[in-house]
Structure formats: structure tokens, C-alpha cells
Image 1 (cartoon, rainbow, N blue to C red):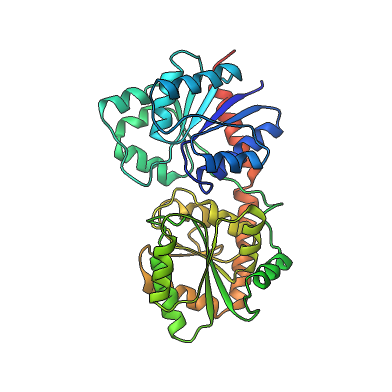
Image 2 (image 1 turned 90 degrees about the vertical axis):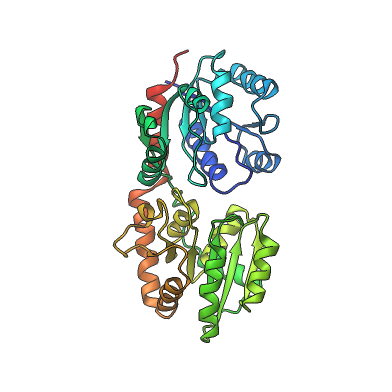
Length: 367
């Protein structure tokens, strides 16, 4: 059966939902299905279009008649039988549109950043949801803890997957990245890959790294990503006298080069569902130190073999973990190799696409 799927997101940037939707769309298309991306923000639309993916931008971020009509027109034009959504706005919009055009709604639940609303209207909108897709055990529990009645919605767990052919150790690209930014070969490089927004833990990372720098560790903090907090974070780094490089948003090949240049990848985020940045770093064979927040431990594992977890928001613990790892190149090598093996065996991209193909095949509305 050919699946005909709309992937609708109100995400305002590439990291997170945008990157995951791109993987889903490409993977389903490669298997002969129809997957059409629907966005609400020009910057994400252009990024997806540059990847050669079918994408249409609809008006604004509201759920008025104009927005419903735009979505309804796309569903009809492309004969789409399923709608995957990942924000409350998208649930509402799809609930209205599928009253007229027969299609099932799958909620890729993505609400760890704030408490979900649980009023009567939200329950009515969610009654239109055929099933929920959860990326981790943690977010599934978080959803049911906030609203126990959500347990009545059929659920599936489909973790993110990673392309280990594309995301792989690239030592030569790492050397070129260092040369491009004038980073000395003997300088220890710590990379964070995240949108520059609150709750990503950049201040905690900077505080920890400043402690190490103050002890004489020659290091550079490379901050990859864009967002409204860049100038604020630049001031934080300057106030701590922490050597830092802000690269802005990078293309995929540049991300791989930055990761390959890293001695350690640091993910201090205080709230996570199943972080793409960590999975990509692991696929590139990099040792990762991450805050033990949300579903991050499900990706890294808790045995310490494929990465190091530290308490979230604790710069002292983070400094200790980073200091020990930066001083031990053999351990870094072991962790990086084990991290890549874990991605290859537990979280390959093919398994993620298998999961979406199975879920959509079970619930898709018939022609």
C-alpha cells in the first residue's frame, strides 16, 4: 500500500522537528510513498526546499478559516490520507481540516518545553487524533502524567534514527574546520550543537568550561547554532573570559565537520525528548558529555560505555566530567567508538523509517 502523508509542523527553525521531518519525508519517499511537508515559517520552508523535498508553506501560525482552507486544499490536491503533526496548533488545524477531508491525524507529541493545556477544547481537538507517536519513554510518561486521559489514545514509540553513512567520523573535514576558523591543532575543542534558546543550558556549559580554563586547560568552546540569545551568550562568555566561537547555523556537511573537529561534544540542555544533536555526535564517533535530562539517557545509555551523563544544571559536576575526559584521550577514543556502535545497532535511520511506515500503514485512512 502506498502511503500518502502530510508532515505538518509549525516549528520555527531547522533543529529538532525540522530535521526529523526531513528524515521521515526522505525515508518514506525512498520507499515509494508520498510524503508532503507543510510548514508555516519561511526559514524552515527554504531549508527543506534546498534539500529537494516537496514542501508548501501555509499562512501564519493561527487556526482561522484561511489556515484551515490552505491545509484542506493541500490535503485534497495531493490526496493525502494521513497528517503527522507535532504542535498543539497543528493538532487544532488538522482537527478542523479532517472534518471535511477524510484523513487520520497522528500526533508526534513534542511538548516537553511547557505544560500542555488540558481544557475541554484541547480534549475535543485531541479526540480527532488517531494515535500518538512518542520519541522516548520519558516523553510518553510525561504526557500521561500531565493528562492521564491521554493514555486512552493509542500510542506508538518511534525513536529518532541516524544516517551512519552520512554522519560518520571525518578526520580530514575536522582538520579543515579547525583551519577555517584558525583553531590551533593542539587546542582542545568542545562543541555544542543546539538552537540558542533558553533551557539549552549554554550558561551552565560556559560556567563549567570557564572553571577548566581558569585551571589552565587550553580549550575553545565552539557553539554551533542560531537563535535570539546569541548576543546575550556572547556577553556571558566574555564576562567569564572563556574562549568561545559562535558559528551560527551550519549546513549538514558543516555540522559533520564541526563534530569531527571536536575533542568532546557537550550537550548541557535542561529539557530534551530525544536529542538529534547527541545522536549525530555519537554517529560521528565523538565522546559526548550530556545533562541527564528527559530522554537523553535513552539515547546514550546509563552504563557509561557510550557517553557520560551528569546532573542537569550542575556546573561543578559538568566541569569534573569534562576535565577528566579532556585529560584522557584514550578514554575519549573508546567512548566515541562505543557511541557510534550504539547508534549503528540501536538507532539506525532505517529503524526510524520502519517505525513510521508501520504506524502509518496501520492507521492510514483508506482511499
